[in-house]
Length: 191
Image (tube, rainbow, N blue to C red; front, side, top):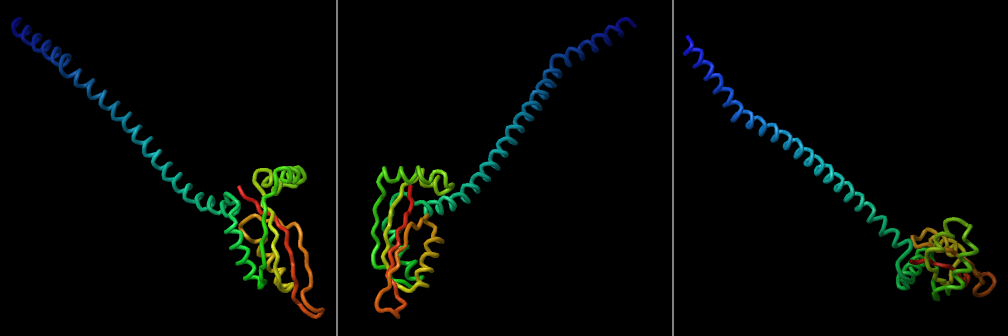
């Protein structure tokens, strides 16, 4: 019986040694792989979140790009004399007046600084003037009073920021005529 007990004891000891030497390291390896898998899954989740944010930002960028283009029309970069001439002629044609001439000149820095100081407290226009350059435009045209009114409305509704400073209205022709010559002094802003 002692031999039988010794054999059982040795088998039990061999099982413990086998478990200790082979199965426990394998179990630790499995635990390590599980923890590594969970950390990799967290990284994948973070990457997916970043990809979703990138998609959102790309969408916002595309939406803002249209706004940026509109802002560039509102306050163009540079004086853009050709654009001014084209838009004023088109607005005149829509209003039913004939634009004879457009004279423009950038305002001097001293004149602009004085104007900025005067209008600094007037709100949004003062802020725009403080940050941007001013182009003074004198528009000479002929047409009816109704045409002048429509032309001024077109200038006000134009995307490019324009501030009308002065309007001179003179009758053209004999007393009963409904045609007028008019000069409009306006300021246009650019970046």
